[in-house]
Image: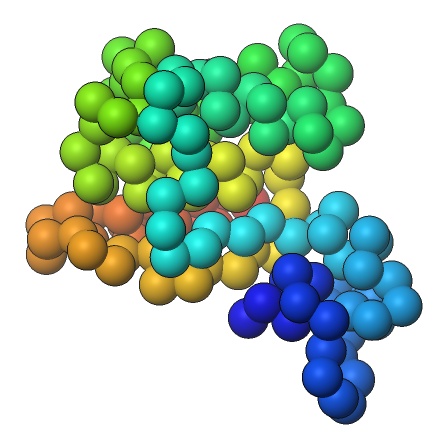
Length: 140
């Protein structure tokens, strides 16, 4: 997973992701993928909205586009009042949905999900998969 997402260099062989070689075209791969790791990707003292906006800005969205995308994702993934909540005050399920929003902020063509439901109870696990499937269906 880390080699395909260009976090680690390949130890051998060859791989293409989204049509690009992970060894020689890593920046092009990164532009086209989203990644949600096992752990929480958001800072603990930041507001959810700020985390998603920052991720969009890192990937080149202008301020207005990043804010619009963040609002869209947070609305789709959970109660909008979470946008102003600091991540340390969120439940595990809310933090995982925030991680998903962060991974989707730049509209990636391909999303890597590394055990996205780890640590969630069955209800939150099902809810998160419903969100993932819904977002995937909306993108097609």
